[in-house]
Image 1 (cartoon, helix red, strand yellow):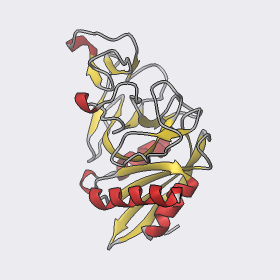
Image 2: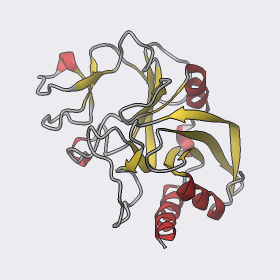
Image 3: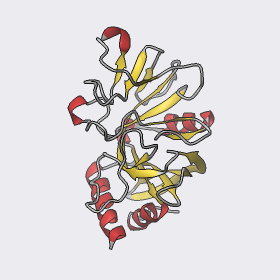
Image 4: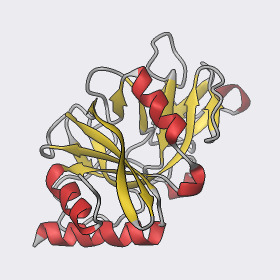
Length: 232
């Protein structure tokens, strides 16, 4: 019964969103910190695979239901919270891609510097927002630099979890600064892969096709795929 309830939420969300591109991430269970990613595109009312399936890492403590365009089931056992080391499960719109240098693509893309911060301080009015730190009066202690010596954010995509960048839509403590980016080990909550893989995904994204991230356990996502007639 539980899987049917979850499936209903996911199906209704896809219908309402009218998406034609999906990034689908699956894990074996709610505590897994690694999984698989497959892209899909809808043509003539049919979903088709795009590219090969790739191995990814995500939150070191697995998954918890996040805040996206879906409805969190009333009986959800695992719910994403700030600092819990979990990646958000559910359906999420994608905002801009980003990186350390210009990248010639059609999809919205931002170049970030060391002065651009994503704020994860729950007491800040800038919680879950990417800000130019030089242009504001800082009221936060905890944040992530959007550019640093490692290549983790050389290329990435902003996931619209918990109303990122939208201020009043962000629920304090529900999790912040969720991205798809470069890394080879489990994270504090992001979904990660190698540089060539993330670049290929960014080049494929088409804003007019309203791409979504669908992330969850294998059982949940496979049921969704079956009902949406997505070819495996």
